[in-house]
Image (cartoon, rainbow, N blue to C red; front, side, top):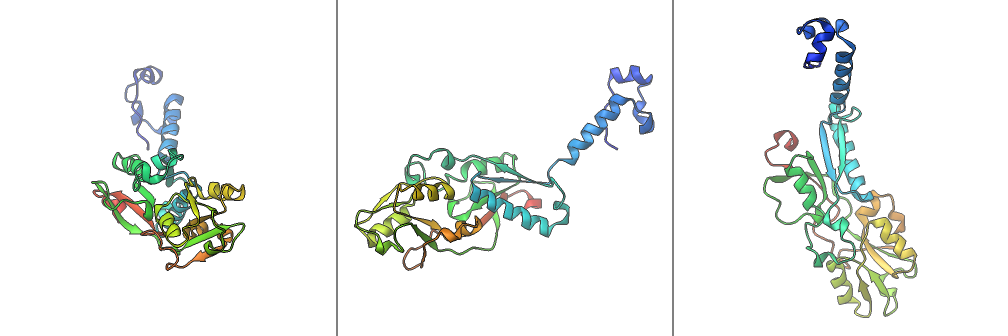
Length: 260
């Protein structure tokens, strides 16, 4: 039975301050309603709160994590047992500047890690390539999901490869890694800052803002958008980011339940 404290007003209705000792069928309507409301609220309490960014790709990764947890733990299969909480990060808010100019690594994880440390969420789902080398004190990354394809995809409506692009062609990319490798091999091309989620970048490409862009194949596959890839770049053509294609699950270092 859900415990409900009896107030003075309830005493006068029931004629006795010991009303809760009576069988529930004798309880007054006020208490029955309170019991029902509190029971309903408790039924909706999540066993695990997953923190994630709100982009379609981040949500796809959070949903994959949720589904794997449900499959592994029967108690998590119930409706509402796992809650996904969207957290806006600096990288999501500031879109008009190159990532390197506003802090680089950690831009897509800082606010999520803060929510983890203050207890707003129980676990955090990160793209491992966005995770800084050193984790915030009090957090750990005890596991990763199976890694996807690590390669980059070349996407263009006018050429089949970087080598086929005419001199002066614009390539959209917010990645210094991609920019430096492209310009080293194809100095006649131009790379411009290209921010936004995967769908936004594909839209900008189709609207002609740039002639080509590069995206992680792993993200395209998780979003069921791999058919947009014009060609795939071998790791000799384009060295991938460290941990590209991997999803990391973070939790508090003192949270034994989440760690296991």
